[in-house]
Image (cartoon, rainbow over all chains, first blue to last red; front, side, top):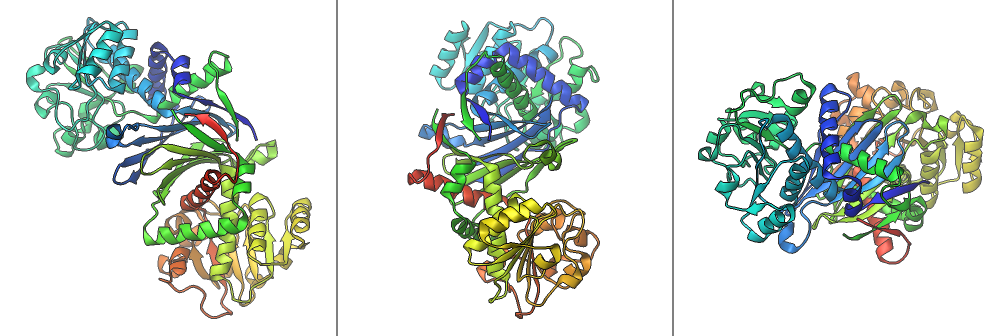
Length: 315
Length: 315
């Protein structure tokens, strides 16, 4: 029996600030692209009628992780978290369990970090202003990570005015309508994806879009006519084509694999990113287990270096 | 943030005795056979050169579970556990995490319980004596569960004399050679499966074999000539045909699906079990996520009823 540290959401956030999260997510994409980090397909376990559980395994840098996370879309209506669960971090060399980590905090951090990283990698060199469409938990973390990466000021838009106001106040940005947010240099969409929140007439030369919300086939945050004008990138083709922003267009035969570049390939320099500065880029972020692993390792390292406390349990 | 109970191995064993484990494993097989309990395929994450991790999800009776467990075969040589990790138990209605449970204890209990259950369901009515070939952790728990189910006395055989002596002393049984153990009414094999430990000349009319050890394609504890004389049962055809005792014979085209009956179908009364009393039955136990779930629910219930203590962590 060994003592295993347990990290709640506060400990995760204390251990990994947005800048470190962006750095670790960049490393995760890079090492996955080289093949050093492994990521079998996630498994879905349906839990009708309220949602599903996902088991997301990954291995890299001497660790193996498994995130057990919910998507219970109706939970916010009953005051319960939509995304909850835990991540188990193990030593890939000995098999021993090394840490238990709150997964909502990890998910928010790595999701926000991916949006900011995509702006750094794919956005125009002079991109500065930010639009956040959907200012819930992950939208807010995208804003925080972009601010940490020196983007902004930005426009916060949300059908729930309070959510937009809270985020704008926190970051020193302003609130605005959907159209206003969609006109900025870097636009992050984090909505349920049931109907598009970016249409073709919103687009301006040189913009970068990060679509984080659509998480199942048939959902999309950009209308097809907008998507067609973008140069397309994703985190992972199998996930993006099956259930991300691009999945509807893929299913309809409108987007084929050779038109979509994985961001890891761009980071590695093996594929071209943005071409001309007036191109419009779109990053389809579905959220990968390797991102979770990268953040979890950073949390564990912070604890080993005595930078954050943790409860210990015998297991 | 909520308080989540954490159960170490001692707490698991205090919460669930062998009789209760057998009862819960029976229920798990039964409800899986009716379709009430769900079990997506497990996912393997290779961790070369030492082993692999498995993520095993299941859902039933209002809970969802995920076992994150290692198989690091060489670990015993370096004083580390071969099987380690944790099981996460969640509420399938709300998604909330309900418990974190040591997975080595759960794995031992449910594996031993399956052996005993298979003897009850498939063994001859007058079967009594037991042979345990391979007296490591899971062999010992098979012995304990069979003893709890009123089988015995038995013969404990192991290439490591101390392991056999320890188990024999604990249960009031005796030690013996492989051939001696293989001659008993109920024979449980829990060996690495690299070479057969039961050959055709060992077989006697009316015996029941439970093969627990082979866990990958190409491994087998019964030689093919012995297998051919048995009526065949398994816990789950997809797992058994892919990596259980039967997998080699399946791959060689010697055993087809219609010759193998799932034990859940027998428990439900939808399929025939043992025919004549002199038939020889073989149960291929690969170990299912639904068994883990059944035991984990019992652990959680025991805690809710104040029968076992647990450390609480915030997550």
